[in-house]
Image (cartoon, rainbow, N blue to C red; front, side, top):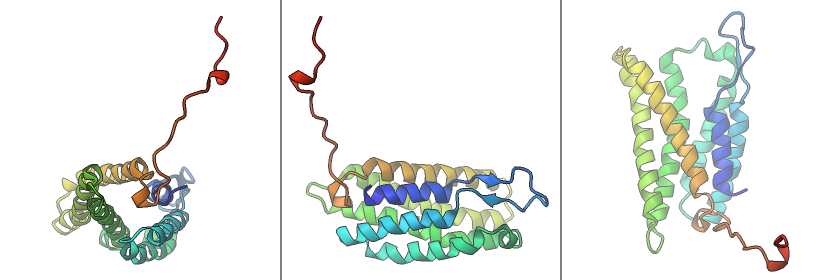
Length: 197
């Protein structure tokens, strides 16, 4: 498994939610079956492998560690139901910072290729700005009491998270990102083909 695959799989667990039990009492007492700290363990494994193999990714280690540590206590509903919207936004900042810095590092690394990988540069550059917007929308919605932005903010975050995971999987084979290189499909040999009738 390549470093970017580990990071992407970890983020699937972090971004996803599987609430249990189905009908808790009181209604806040539900757990996330996709345990975020487990996802961050996968992310950290990918980040450490990536920073060992490729220059330019050392700076994303600390945000990843910080987000992993923060994810442990907030997995427990006994704590999170006592935290308001502003507090939950503040606790999400390490995760957003990691995603933003990861997208930036991938985009910058793509520019160092000869020739530059413009596909990666454009996509991850756009994702970097999308995470910056995702970090700024909640304070506007919460602080400005703009309730019309609530659903827009949630939908925007889902789209950005899904796009980030998709593009991490999409580019994971690139050797300059620690990947194994292009997938080679060998044509079948004559003796492997079924006999013609």
